[in-house]
Image (tube, rainbow, N blue to C red; front, side, top):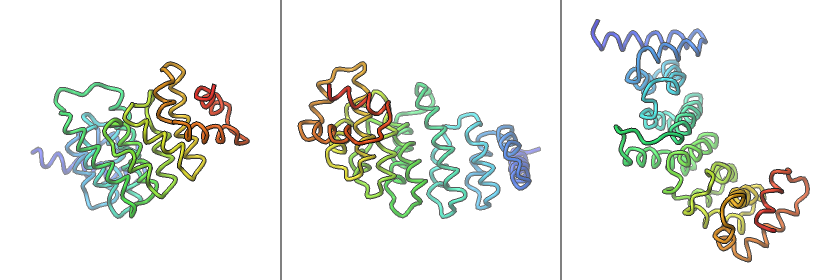
Length: 245
């Protein structure tokens, strides 16, 4: 059987399993068919085939290379495909963040994926679920080289919350100024608290001065007001206290 015929058979098996509601089997068929067939499934105009590709995307070999086509699906007009595609991409990006860059990938590849997902995070005509997931994906891929201030300037507080709660630990130095400005200026106290917790939690091991300098007097004054809010979780109080003691 030719490679084309094998690919078509794999796509048909994936689609049939998804139409039966057997997501696990759709994923298994995708893994058996291989990453090229899964990529073709993700690019399909047929929803069942796309969903089968999404189910297989997080399990197939070389899955990080599917981040580009998953971004295409997540940016598409069908929310029933877009949101699951973004969830799959988040799983892949987080797994990738825990590994070293493979020899067959260049930093430019990662930068291109980061830019695609950053653009989707900033796309105000997209569903907020996709935008929030896109923030998390971009941060997992390359936290030090994002237009982070632009993301934290978004009018939707859900997007800003996703940004401050998805920052890796320890916080990259390049992100501190934007987080400190959020502590000082964000009108949503939950966003400001998330930014403060991200900064202050690092002080369990890192020197305080760079964080305190980034916050400045106004940031520390806002932080004190936030720390006095009723009902804060114990972990939040503990982290904020690292900046205030």
